[in-house]
Length: 283
Image (cartoon, rainbow, N blue to C red; front, side, top):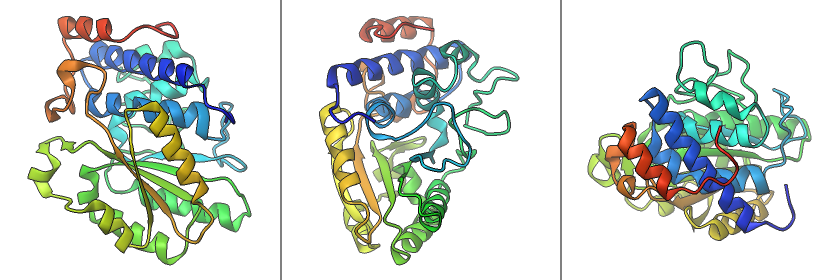
């Protein structure tokens, strides 16, 4: 959205998102903090620098960039981002995973939550949805882009590779996919559960343009997303391999699959908040 990134401001947003995440998951004692924390820098850069979007929200997204979250279990970071970007009141974050809340554990659309175009969390489906949306933009002569985030464990789903073949074959070059490459999934390290081997070579073999960057270094995230954007429109879909650390920003959560879907207790929340400075005001 902005021509020159304000890295100080983007980092403050990412820190506040992390505070929001741990507080949301702690309050309901349910949710997925690990991947959410690891992707906070990406979401801050995406929504406050890269995306052309309107918080007033139009479901068809015509004339705007679209974003789809395939690994929907990291909904805490997305909800916090949408609230901080003005899609709905930040105070609503306090209702996360509560009965009758719009902020369900996995993003859904039936309560008309602004910013959410499709229900997600059934792993493997997001790239297909995003590819369809990108083709629709081409058919409508809409020159905005479609973004999608997937998990690395999610690459074990066959539908991902069907979509990968389809997008490359049809030259869907207005899509930018990103993989949260943290090496962890719910049952343990990805390499032990089902190794992805050389993921870059795989995506290149499937006909995609592949970039790589550190997803926990704001300057690299912005540069990586800007580079990906510059590669669109050249006949190939684009994918970023974004190296992150699960639980980034909270020392006792970092690097372990154990925090994939576990909520911090009162003492753990206190420790986490002590490491994360309040920057935009808590809800």
